[in-house]
Length: 208
Image (cartoon, rainbow, N blue to C red; front, side):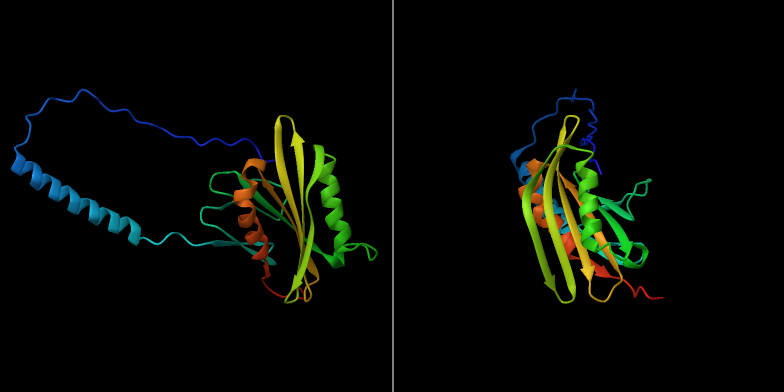
């Protein structure tokens, strides 16, 4: 899915800058005031740092697969083609998840075929679609994750698209994950996106 332009909106409130001149404080008063300010600063800092940062948030796709997202990520509740779509705090990263049940696809069709179709579908909607990183395929503990990264352009914008196929030995269902990132942020955000995919786990048996 196309990642739209995003801007950080900041509002500045300008107060009255015409300050009434005041008499200089005597040295003793200055020392007392400085001491009070120092204590206040320490207390304020302690209070701020004592608050633990918000932890990761888990979202599920069709109650089948769970993904853990960093603090600040939110669920996109607007209409979209995914079974789950989440957006980062600054709207600069997007993760979309499709859940596919093997029992609903043709016998001759594999998870690999569906994965390739998703890539080809986006390829048909982008210009200058090119490979950024070769395919990585790893299996561990009954789970397999296959990932490949492409770059694509639409209108005046260029994005990286990270495609991942997640399969579990004990599940009839699998997930195709499509993530979006600006090329300029790739080196910094790559690990974050990989951790999101790596957090995928089954939520409940699919043979209900």
